[in-house]
Image 1 (tube, rainbow, N blue to C red):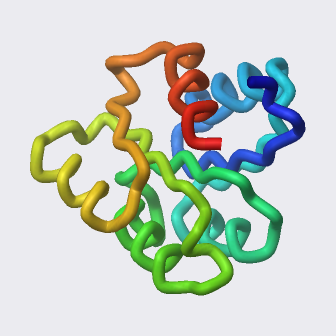
Image 2 (image 1 turned 90 degrees about the vertical axis):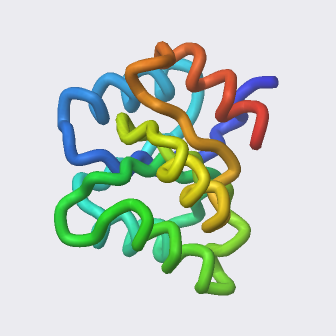
Length: 124
């Protein structure tokens, strides 16, 4: 499946990581928006036509679980698939993310950007 100009929103406070994912996904045909904190991520998700959100958990202003909760409460954003993309990999965190409505939960350190892209394509 080609990306077909699907728009991803990466909510990640580490500029090096978000830049790496942005470059990789744009090279492969996705449009990419980046937010460096939870509040900006939530705002972008509500203002832009976003096809998927890649959401870190540890974020300034509003943590990823709070962003996920707000996205799922809003009729306009509740159908957007959200993949938690974080290094918090405890069973409790994974269960919490999925129970709150994330379609998947990926521990960043365990997958390459290419492997993550394959997961993204599975949900688009």
